[in-house]
Structures are given as C-alpha cells and as structure tokens.
Length: 307
Image (tube, rainbow, N blue to C red; front, top):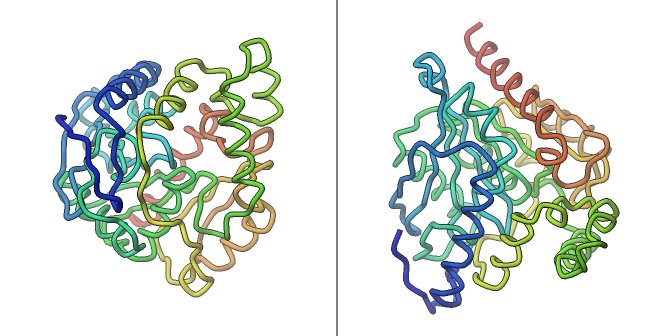
C-alpha cells in the first residue's frame, strides 16, 4: 500500500521511505515463517487506513465458521502471529490487523489518544471487513485493545482471548527495564544471544528474522497510540463477553497469581490460566499448546451460546 512520510506529531509515522521499505522487507521474512495469507485488504476508518491480512481454511465448512481476529502487541505488526496462523487458520478464517499508530502497513491519519477512540477504530475495522461476529485475540498491548473492546464495544464479539495482556494493572518499571534490556541485547554478539534469550525469556534474540524485524521497526517508526490504561474493577465488571486469560508464569507485565484470581472474580464466567516455563510470550514459547487451548475455548464459547 503506498504511503508517504508524515510529520504530524500526534500520529504514527515512518522516519523516511527507505527505512519503511527496509522494515517491510524484514516483516515479510517473518510472515514467511507462518501461514501464507490468502488476501490482504485495506479498510478505511475515521483514524486512517487499516491493513488486514486474511488467512483461511480450504474446506467450506471451516471457512463458514466464526472468524478469529488477531491484534498484535506494541512495537510490532501482524507478522508476530507466525507461530499461530497455521493452526488457527486450519480451523477457522483468520484476520490479522496492523494497528494504526504502530509499525506495520496501516496508515495513521488522525490521533488515537483515548480508549474510546481505540474501540471506535476497531469496531469500524470489523464493520469494514463485513464481520458481525468474531473471536478477538490480543497479545500484550493488543490484549489491552481486546479488553477495551469487550468493555466499550462488545457487540461484534463472540469471545475474547487475552495473551499476557495490558489493561489489568499499571505497567511497572520492571516491564520497561525488561523491554530496554531486551532491545539492547539484540546488539549482543551472536554467541551470547541464546544465553541472553533464556535469561530474558526473549525469543526475539534467537530468531534472526524476528530480531531483524524488531531492530528495523525501532529505527523506522515513531509510535503514537493510546496509553493502555488499566480498567477499573467496575469497568471489568461490565464485561459479559466470554473471556479467556492466558498469563506467563514469569510475566513482567502483570502479577499472574493476582490476576488469575481477580479476573474470574470480576468477570462472570471468565477463564484464567497460568502457563509455566514462559514469560510475556506464551503464544510463541508454547505455540502448539496455546493454539489448541484457544481453539477449544472458541468452540466452547459457541457451544455455550447454542445451548
């Protein structure tokens, strides 16, 4: 999709065309690790053009099922779902959305500063895709977007799956320190990266395509998006959408034991699980298992409505 460098301070932008194209090339290398998209489309919204990748099962029965919509984490794009798109799209149609204001192929034109704006943008995107009912899946910052949608605009949601999400508590210093150290570690000598990856629980360091994409994105794009403000207990209590919370045992974004008790207490019927041997990326570290669990949850959410 043609884009031009933008200079407005309140919208996300690429630094220049050369860095943008270098980032796109790095993203394409990561996309190649997952399922091949059957289509790409652009959806016009009040806040800009949203770029969407579509994946889908070959059989008509699977293609007619309620689709899955994936919303990526901060500082990334839809390529981050490469461990998940093959299994999910074998069972259901899958749409992966590039969030405006973050690096990706969407074009950000108007500011997205408030949670209400984020909910409106996502609803307009789903409407533009012709999707009346979806299973929404969000990771990290995308988890906040999904949680925010369940609170502010749940009309199109069949279920919500949150993968170590924002929006449950204030982001502490330990998470930002982890992000900074992880980014710094991408410049470490190749021989040291496996050890650092284990210590930081950061797969970016040992997947060369991911490492290249992250580094290219940091250089190429200036992020502008809503702050993932935590939802209050009252706000969480308004959610009636079927909800599945997956937390890494060593998450630095949230306190897993606290949230695995708190969320089901506040949201009727919510499921919450802690995954061992992982931190902030359960869907990457344990992709096969998380894919199976997500699909089972979506099936059960539909069965509950049917009965």
